[in-house]
Length: 456
Image (cartoon, rainbow, N blue to C red):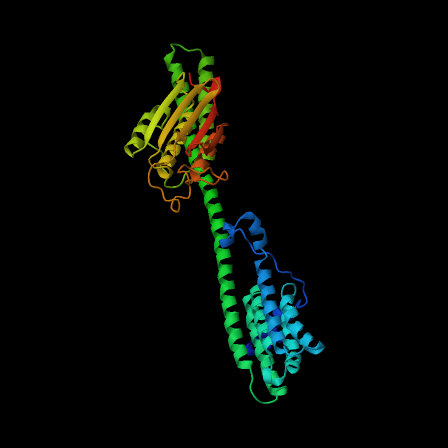
């Protein structure tokens, strides 16, 4: 016989209603009682965004104090409202009743939650000093001060705090009517109605501002992820091309080593063994290369049937972009020679991407392509003038006011620039991309090529 014993803790045995009340009271304690005396000075307003970013630098420094100025202005209004009540002559008690709500409004700048409790706590005393005929339980200056306190504290805390402050205000109004009321009119209903409007407006604005911040942060993260993904995709493409280039040459070495003994009549055994060793090493290296670099191929990737493009194919590329409306002038300096296939392919891709950028971001501009065969390597320069076509800066954020391309603020700012840098860095070269004096754009690259690397 199996006995099943079910135990219930005090937490699980309580009703859902009790737990709901417990959570609600816990939220009230967290929002309005926990660290009620905490010192939290109001921070300066961010002047780097919004309309304030258009202000001159001198004025922008003081524009950050705009929230402080607004609170101080509201405190002055509260002071004059209280002073109007005692215009016929003000004594020490009347002066205290006038200054106290003003000081409570200013208290929101440093201790926001404490100012809420101070506003509620001083309301009956100020109402008694002002006289029952001026409103109960809020006197005129207390009425205005409490609305300002609710708005400022709601703006400085979380939206849930606004709900608890309204409930606290309603509870105080009910208590004052039941236990402190003297009969006659009351301003509790107008207070609760206007307070609800104030808190609702501030909360909606606060929620929208928080949503904008989250969207901006998400867009920043997304842009970073896109940049990282672009770098990874470009590296994957380079690895694929590297695999194709090296695998091709290793295959040729293996085939030539296998066929070499048959080209010689009665070759000595040592020569046959040497060619056999060369072939075995080439096949082993090819197998290892495919094992390491082959994993970067996507499942649907197919090796190109045509040979990879080289600098000899630049004329076809220029004719192609010319058909798209781009005027390109090509200049070749130095002794033209065959370079390693990886250098030829990367140089071709750099020119291709640079001309594509001109077509996208500087329509109507003329471009120049300079290929320099120097002693230590290969130099490239692709430059374009300012755009001559119709460019809408709002739709083309990469264009400068003069019509040329803006320089990338970082290595990952532009996807095309990122790919070109990756290729040049892989080959141990250097690259620059910057705006020219006439408002155009210029990309220069140098790829070192040693004499041993040049195909014979």
